[in-house]
Amino acid sequence: MITSTPNERDTCQKNEILQEIERVLVKKTKKLEKENEILRGKVSKVVHDLAESEQKNIVLKQINEKIRYNIKKINGTRTKFEQITSKNHSRRELEQQKEILLEIDTKKSHQHKKTVGIVAMAVIAIIVSSTTLAINDQQVANYEGMIKSSFVIENLRGDTVETAISWQIPDEKILYVNIIDDQHLTPERFEVIRETIFSEEFHEIDDSELRKGPKGNVSKYYIGWMGALKEASKEPTKFPIPTNMEIISEKNYIAGDINIRLTNLAHGDGISGFTKVIADTSKNQILKAEVTIYDVDRISLKELEVISRHELGHVFGLAHSSAPEDLMHPEIITPYPYISPCVVDAVHSLYDGRKKSEVICEK
Image (cartoon, rainbow, N blue to C red; front, side, top):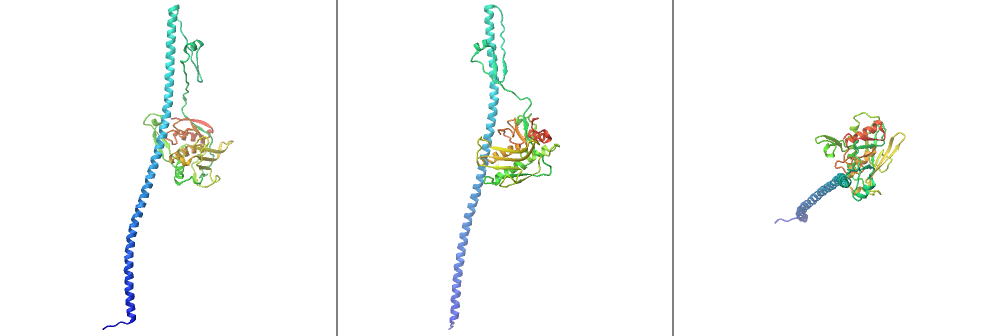
């Protein structure tokens, strides 16, 4: 018979307890691993669903921007169509008036010929001045209520871009563009404005699309001002065209030569953007420029891009264009809101010392 000492029995019991604890821990560990695996699967699904939802939101936002852009394009086309229709209608009315007058004069002449035997020739004098139509008293008595008139002046010189005032800085001087850092400046908006300043990309657009020439001839329309300014700089100018710029983001207007501020406030006159240029008019020289873009939370990124591009045209010294299809027109209705060759020519003319003038577009 083998007997064990109390110490051996205690050791044995401890070993059994430890083994039991180990078995329980192994069981618990396996259970926890299984639960963790299930949890990881759930987390993975949630992450996937969130990513998918975010992607859907991006796509929906792009679709919404495309719809808004197409609506603007349709409205612009409708406006042009209405203008053309109005002109055609006025021409038709004038032709009809001439036919009516001719017919009545013929009848009067025929009646007079019967009674007297003398052919009388009716002379109708139509004098267009401003928007008035003048005829003699006897004709007023006979034709009252029949005659309408309209008056249209076609500009045979071609469309123009007005220039105002230029920067006059050395080549080596840096123009600092300060996009004011506040709650409306999201990373997406910052990138949009940065692109309108620094992009050198361009679209090649057929001249026939904008009624600038026959189909098959294409012109460059720049996305960003850096590309347009460099294009204008290819020929020497009296004053350097500013192409040396850096972008910063501070909370005050002191930091930048060009300051751009985004606000959710609406302008009292309903305008989308406003540019104020501080200048030394005696030298025709811009000293500082401030751009404000309104209603920023209610406009799309595409609209922000177009407004920024237009206002920067004023920053670099341009006024407005007379062409409705041009970016620098007071109302931006063009389906191609990019920097046109005419705008590039206007920049070159301004910095070549022309000061305030009108540059006639070649196309």
